Image (tube, rainbow, N blue to C red):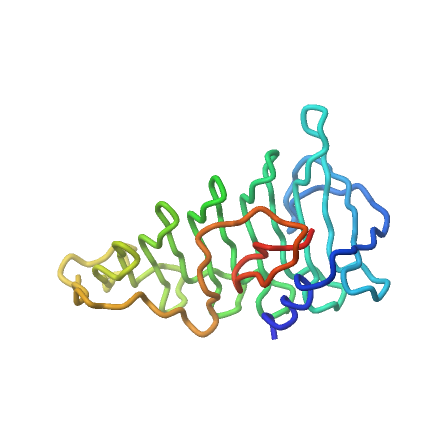
Length: 222
């Protein structure tokens, strides 16, 4: 459902109808940032805003500091994208099951994905953590029993699993005697059912609609 609705929003036509603007704090989710001016857009032409840009003035120049999207046209924001003053993505947050809670948060540096936090249980607590180096997955940590502590570890080299570890004593670190080397031909790890596919980069938003990845609004028309 998520991907289908997402495609409808970001595959919309080039003409967007501006619906006025209002000043608000950028960031959302209770965060306090410098105020920006919201400009809503109606992508599907039904007269109701379903995408928003928030503009702020930096060094005398108007820049977009946040974008938000309602991907299933129910009037609620499902995707948040934060941008720096140069227009580069710093963070994406997504509500995958459309229940109003953030399920995936992705952090970027220089438009490269560096960390991802995923809530596989949909209980508003991340339990899968993925760390990237040079745009490639380098380490994965997971809280497999939902006790708030990571207990499973995967280390990667060249995009493939190199070794795995388990924390059996609850100290949050892999037990030295429980490391397991992966076979040399081990394929990359398949994502969990509730986990979106990886996209190691955050392409700058473009006015040309295109099919985005399931993980980030990389080719949003706004």
